Amino acid sequence: MQLIVPGADERHPAALAERMSATIPYAALARTVSFDALRTADDLASAVVPEVRRFLDL
Image (cartoon, rainbow, N blue to C red; front, side):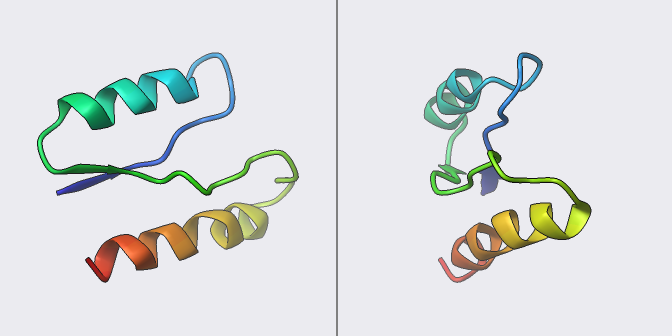
């Protein structure tokens, strides 16, 4: 099982993440990650860690 976190830039478009999660068997898409206010690595961790925890609890 894989967790796919969509990006927020031209190189990592959210639409690609959605297609990947629909194509890869047993893939899960992290839908609630927002990259709008990220400025530091700690901001990134705060945005992604809850999704990773949810994924691992499956």
